[in-house]
Figure: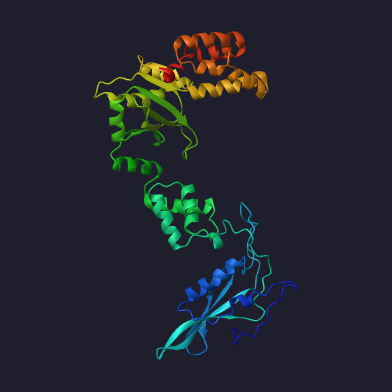
Length: 417
């Protein structure tokens, strides 16, 4: 319906502008202002723009105390100045004049007068001075999280669901709505975690769940800076499994997986049925001999009560770790990880021969290629394949001897015996 009180003539924005007023002309009686706003916003979304409530437009209408409010285009304000900001940004505001009006009225229902909200359009106020949105992904007005979606994100965050899976879950729940961006979800999950953390700092929050779950844990604090430097954590059930199967420990580190970019060391065990399980994890400041010795001593402390002994350590060629293993576990065999060895050989072959074709020939040649060496099923077969490989590709075999020394060849045994 038209607004009878509208006498103001709004500026027009060109002969080709679209008048959106007809889309909002309705005789529906809404129970609340929010109901009217949600109805109007759904129509706006379908047509590429969003509405906001102009709360400062709330005012008394006539003399009967009934209220009125404007729903405006989200770009209706004046552009914000950004020259003084460290990172200048472009304001979305462009003084758009589009608006519709929501007013209260008395209607008769069941012989009683009831207050309802009606939407009114104003002549000349149905035009925009900007292009409508075509790509709505990540826009906070189109793809912003409502109360139900925030509750869903909170539930999934608290049970440890990954951000990408939360995003997929939201899309499955409301496929017709534009998806929120990863940044929007990240900001929401960060607020949730901050709320859960309370007054605890990052280090305290990391240790608190471990203490509550009764993890076996040790940590070290720098005496001067008072910073948390070393952490070792192991679940009680993982310790039981490790004590039952103390045969093989596979160790590797990852980087840039935490705020401080410290190495995160994972220790994985293997059962006789070739099932893998996490024994413990630890963060250390650097990959030095001393830091690795601290970590390995804590691993040894887990086995002290049982008298069980380890058989094999499998690692990459990390010299600090290799040195610490010899000091803390002098009687335990050490093998190099087959995956890391293959990766190094592929890279070296490409560097030496310069083409993918030659690299492939070095690796896959059935007579004297690297795959024949690494896939040997007996020690005798390995020795024969290794001699053939050395005669055919002396430059690579010399590199292996220089790089791995006494460990050259030990990487096969763990996978074949």
